[in-house]
Every structure is written in C-alpha cells, then in structure tokens.
Image (spheres, rainbow, N blue to C red):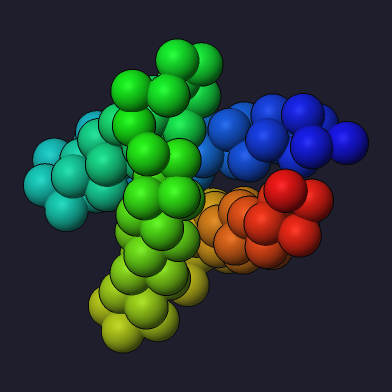
Length: 104
C-alpha cells in the first residue's frame, strides 16, 4: 500500500510540474518555469532510492512548495480549466502525503 501511495505522489508531482512547464512555454513566464523546475527537482529527491536526502525534509519541502503554489494561485492565478486540474493534482499530493505519513 505504501509503495502505491508513493508512486501516486511521484506521478502527481510530475504531472503538476509538466502542467506548469506547458503553461510557461508559449508565454515565457519565468515563475512557471521556476515552479516546474522546483517540482521536478523535488520529484528526483522524492524518488531517490538511496537516501541521499533526508526523506522527512524532502516531504516537508514538497508540502511547503505545493502549498506555496496553491496560495500563489489563489492570489494571482488564472481561473482556467487547466489551472483547476493542476490544483486538484496538488491537493491530491498534499492528501497522499498525509496518507503516507499515517502508513509509515
């Protein structure tokens, strides 16, 4: 069960990073490039099998990064369908992180 939750979290991280990259590309929006890069780097650290990174710190950074993107979207974001789909993915990340914490 824990493995499935972690795989789901990883997939959702990659999805939200790809959405941000997709939105940044045509308009050249630096903020979206930074958010996408952050999510990709966090995904690499999260999926690292050798514990080069402290897992608790990676999860904390992932939570904070995801919450920050949600708050920034609430303040500055566009209310397009793709944005709502991305926010659903981000809320699922936060929820699954909570589930992962309960399983470990």
